Length: 181
Image (tube, rainbow, N blue to C red; front, side):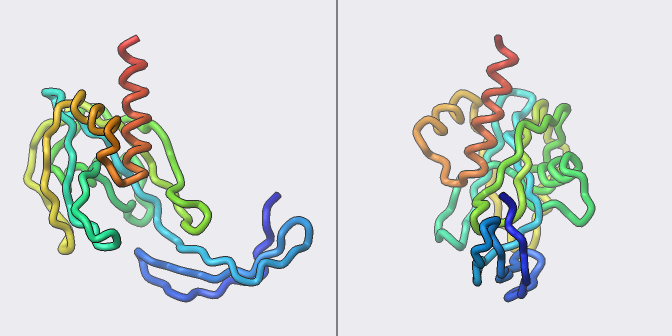
């Protein structure tokens, strides 16, 4: 079922946007003359819950869609970084919170028809504010602390646009609900 890559040509080679055009051969011998792939590094995000039961949501402007979105904290892995280390770092940088417990709840591909890379999904619990935000130059993030059940209601009302973060919340709520049984 796997395709054979005959050749690859890089159209863009940037750490956050690498695009290539592949020529592929399908198992039945059919040649695909132009298959475009956007290579992305792995990413992480977490439904992060504070000690007092609030979920940390972040609001930030997303230029590709031209809107301010409410999302979960997360970001790209650094070169050679472990996923659990990456989410702990991203949580600290974006929110200033450290967490007593961080569990991976899933791994999803954003759009595997054109994008490479996976997003690792986490549930972080026992968050305690220990620092201020340490944002990248291009980040402007407003933090919102929202009660857990209100986040569940927001999810049910389809108030989150970021599909990977929706997946994270669904898996995190499944884990939380499993703990309550």
